[in-house]
Image (tube, rainbow over all chains, first blue to last red; front, side, top):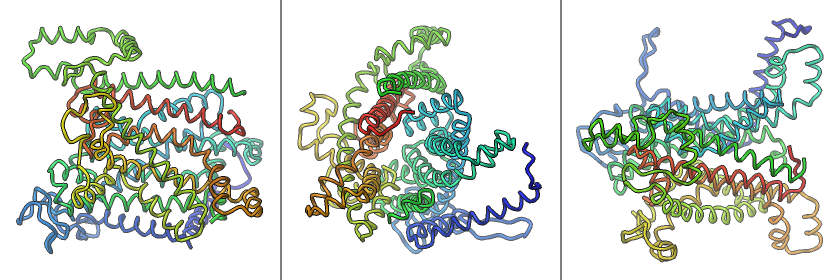
Length: 313
Length: 326
């Protein structure tokens, strides 16, 4: 480990301070960017809906927050099947007499879960691979980049279909299949960025004072490429959600976790696509809005990472 | 490193990638639940017959023998027999592969024609209402999964307006027979092709549009554009002859990569529109445990992706002499 002049406490507080500054500068970017603001607001609405979709009990406060969903998504309504929207069922019912609105609200959770977990894991793997590959170079770089090339040769959706068929269609397996492909773009981009940082004087000075490899990689270089990681995370959320929706639409979704894509699959298998517009459009529009919100945020982050774009517009 | 050396190295890499892809396929399809005989047990197969079938398929051999045999079969284009159709897989898959290529090829051609024009205009009229609206529309298309775009088009053009047929490749049966012209030459076929191709075009439009716009912005900042304007050339000439032409280069590589990526998208589009292509066949094969067909479809899709990535890399160094080889 390096023995710099700053004490551990100093460096810890300065890290927190830097962190707050960092977040503030990041949020400043959204000022004056209408699309980015719309993206953040939409994402926030989905977050609230997802978290409070079902009744939640906070045990130690002995408090129960009622869920947003008016019905249990699996509950069969007394009325009828394939009912068009009414006061009791604002978005109508399914062929099994279930409330569409409640299913859409409950599906928000699945989307949030897939989007956040898959994107986090993909970007985590991708950033580490890129960092290690570029920092060590030589055969390490060769091996890691050849693996990345090979993953680039695997078609995304067909691979996910086969993997889910082998491992079984649970949400965890779907996320694993998505992550196994999605990390590749982050790895390439982070690698090229780290390659340029490796040449800069600050890395040389860190080496001169005897900092170890891990310290240089994670304390010195990583913070500089982190904005790019965030950018790729935003896009990864979008791609993961699209991939999960497509897989579910094809009938490979998790039967116990009703997602928006799976709702549309159900419409298809019930042969109701022609008449039951109230059952098809809400989940489809939700997928589109959700992915749009993260792409809008991604676009704003892109301008942070690549300031040239800002001057042009 | 010179150009020749780069190409040779990239070619060797291609071979390694293909080998790794073959191996991945082998591992994945050996992990599939059940063995190929489990489909036949329902037919009242005795244990002896089962043993015999396993021996026929060479599944009693040690794994490395199976592996070598498997590579040999792939290289000779022999994918075995379909468990369901009881026909050679090659016969089943090739014709569907053609159908997929026709569909996705049409979609990509339209995506790039529209995308390049649209993107160039967005760059040209920057900071206008047209540009801002264009970006939103493009991002909207990019945020929609293929099946969602397909369903919206179906609802509007088929269920509401009734202009197009809802599914399949032609009105009368026999979707797979006939020669090339007979299959793809008729007006009826074009009516069936329109909506699925439009779906693909809308989804793949976003990448060329946004890329064209941003390279246009770069090119428009260059001095030679100012000079051309100062020479008094009409705006339109500057736009088409000078700005757009110089912006198109990066799109070539992206187009090659997109062609590979579109293979995955075909799975969804073909399912929505019941298109008798390879993607839909793959979904059906996986659902019915028809592993030889599923594997052949996966193999062809992966091969297109790998070859297209290779073409993209070569096109990149060939078209832009400023590129330095790593």
